[in-house]
Image (tube, rainbow, N blue to C red):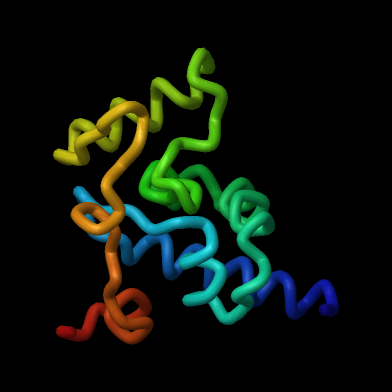
Length: 117
C-alpha cells in the first residue's frame, strides 16, 4: 500500500467512524472491513489518531472484538471512553458491551452516506 493509498483509507475510516450512531459501537475489525481493508483492525486506531481535533471523531464508539475497551482499565483513556459510552446509553456488564445489543450492523452505504437501511 502506498502512502497515498493509506491516506485515502484513513479518510474512509474517519467516514465509517463518523457514521456510528450514538448508543452503538463497532469493533476495530468491523471498521477496517467497512473501510475496505478487512485485515487492518490494528491500523484503525492509528487512523483515528490522525484525525484533526476539530473533526470531533466519535472514537469512543470503537471497541475490541470482545466488546471491551482496549485501554487499560486503570487509565484515563479507559474512564473517558467508558463515561462517553455510558452517557449514550451503552451498558457494560463485567467490563464488556453486549455487541448483539449495542453493535451497529448497518450497511456500508448507510455508514458512509446516511441512506436508510
